[in-house]
Image (cartoon, rainbow, N blue to C red; front, side, top):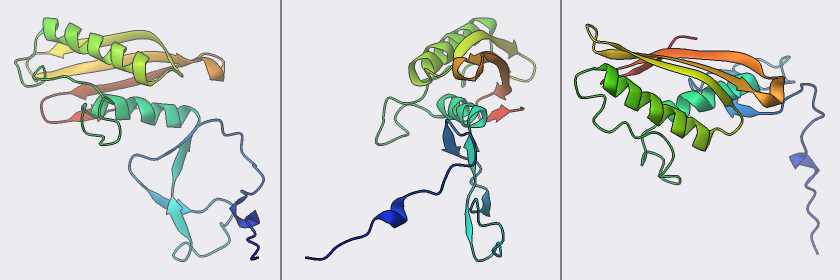
Length: 158
């Protein structure tokens, strides 16, 4: 009987204290960790975000994904419906805020939301969003995610 050696599937010893890891949203190409001595054009990999940055990527993914976009998880994401295509108002800003809070509580249990502000910028026809959150796993460090949402794009600043 043939014997298969699966030792090659074992990872190298961890040198970093990674708890959470996620692919970078921009799919930036970089070197494989631990192989920096090799030429970059011969040995490349997609860079990943770890710990706090991975959770931030998750928040952005939840907010920028509409329900039904992920084929294997059709309930993932937020359903703003027509709110972004209607004229900007304070009332709709409140509705968008409620949708974001409910979605983040449902899809990102690693965070605690401290505050969420959605302000209607009527002249620009967009909503300014500021989310202050904590990650209990990382000593409740307060973090911030700010950006704008309008009918054509989602932009995050930090």
